[in-house]
Length: 445
Image (cartoon, rainbow, N blue to C red):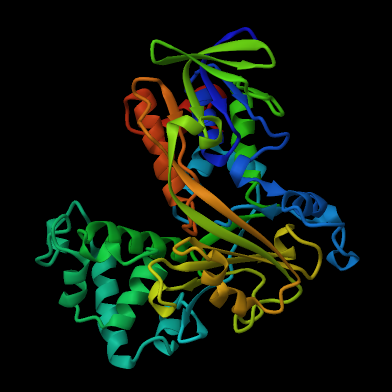
């Protein structure tokens, strides 16, 4: 242990493992420790099922109807990967994909007036959809063509809109889109959880809709991918990458102290030994005094013995419950996967409900989602604090990741990774550079 490292990483959540992988590829000497005996931190997949019961302090053993405990890999945090998003690029460029297999999520659904409707994934589906009337569809189509042709670098595609100044509200007005279409676009395509975006410049929303449609175009059923054996495979894949490039891993290591001298981190003490470092990356659980709480997320893991009603018996899907349908400020999400992804026993489904907490009774807030899932065989409820770092780490060289939010995909996690990378190295995160550095060692295939 008594060695000098460039970077010490505490916690094996996805953010930490990707950064540790990138730093190792960049030639840094990395020591990666976790106080838990398993990989993944907050973003772990729990196996066997007995461990999930223990973790949520449920009495007794899982009933025999749940099948074999080791057939289960249950994610603590429900998220999917955008097929054309940043995490998939990181996986491809680092070739971590060689350790994993993915399946396309079978469909995305949206809740309206107490029922769920499929989010159209083809033009034919859009024309047949009962989510909007015929004239609305025509206007919506014009809007989608505008978005598809829009190019930030080519003002000829702006059609009189200033993407950095025109608000999204005004862009909707330009295309004469009604409230239903606006709700659908903002929440089911741009995947905003609140309506705050309406008064912000439209550029970000346009790019989010483009990401959705480009992701959808890749596989056709939905824009989302999910790894076989659960999301816990992701941090482990990047941990392998780090290890290939000389990174050292230690699980089950109690962290006694982060040693700071003159305001700057110099090392970490574990089991009486000190490892020295120039920079430290960690999740909020290791530095409670350096983070602040900005909210809470409720997540309810539900085990079902049936697919969700009105989803065409899908083995996997997403359901979005827009905030204004249930008088809330933020959307409720349901992510459902099943035995088809090697995360549950044969014939079993796992649906995870999540949203940002808004009241003193979070379990009441998610009732509309639970009603869609009935009958539920077993529920596991967690309420997590959302922590963010109090400072950027430029003085202390302690770089703290943000807690995983209630979004349904990994785009915000990747933004955090790029942000920490820039603060640590002083340069922008570059996907191409990741690829090049890998080729330096392995050569071209």
